[in-house]
Length: 118
Image (cartoon, rainbow, N blue to C red; front, side, top):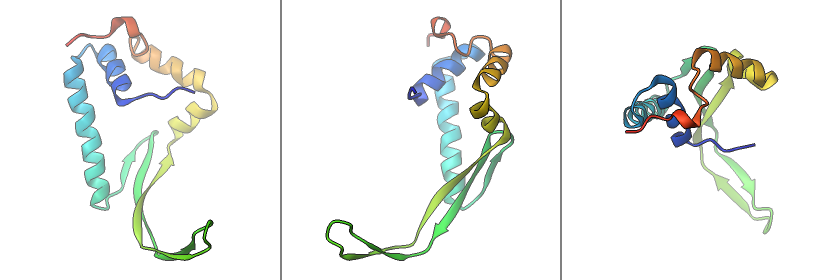
């Protein structure tokens, strides 16, 4: 299993759309910033077929340090919950079918040799 970075995704999108990497990078960063901003405001983000991001509040609790067995107060906090959408779930169940759909729609999205220079 490989780790795909934001740079890897930017390179793929730049190749698929024939846009400059810097422009794609700015759009991707703006998208991530907007997701973080909206989640920080407590809003729910729904991307059809991809998934749903929403915040969840966790109540304060008392935990135990496993090493010292000392009781520790854990404060309340908010976390992000992600519910997988249909297309993403389908891609987990049958990755070859989804990969073919992506390649059909964006023929250059997986081609490293056709990356667009800035």
